[in-house]
Image (tube, rainbow, N blue to C red; front, side):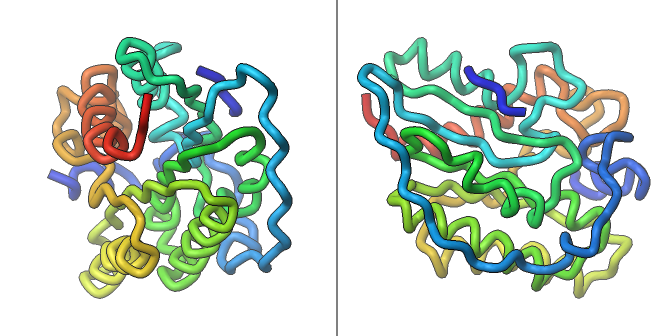
Length: 232
């Protein structure tokens, strides 16, 4: 694999601990607004023998924060693909501490090569920071739109916001993912951390990021949605 870089317990652990731990970058004004649309560059022709790519565009939850090398969700997926005879290379374009705006800003760079599938795992840091849901939804909408303009299959994964921002915010946050999946008719994982969030034995000491056992559960959750989209 090539490397580019219950829920109340999960997200209430600390308002100061974002997905990426203490390496969370300083919030910049540009991250609260949708990035302007840009022309979609033509994807370079794949080199002979090059495997098709499955790209993970995410934050520390897919970057593998707190995990031994080779045990991130994308790493585990690559192991499964290789064992199953699937001819894909998983590219981990995740950055710890990233928001939806950050993911959008580096989208074109992340989609270099013969990309067949884009797995979007973004928004957890938007929710931890209490950023406007409308802006997050706009960023994710732009990512999905621009990927599909390049004939890339999209898998959208959902996240939850911390309840301390109020019921209205958490409800709007959750619904944004469901609306995007319906509007764009893309494959959808309703909650990326299903079966792992809030279970101490499945997370590292911060109570937010999955440990090795938790990562295996998350990988299996993603695989159930991803596998029907692939061929050998």
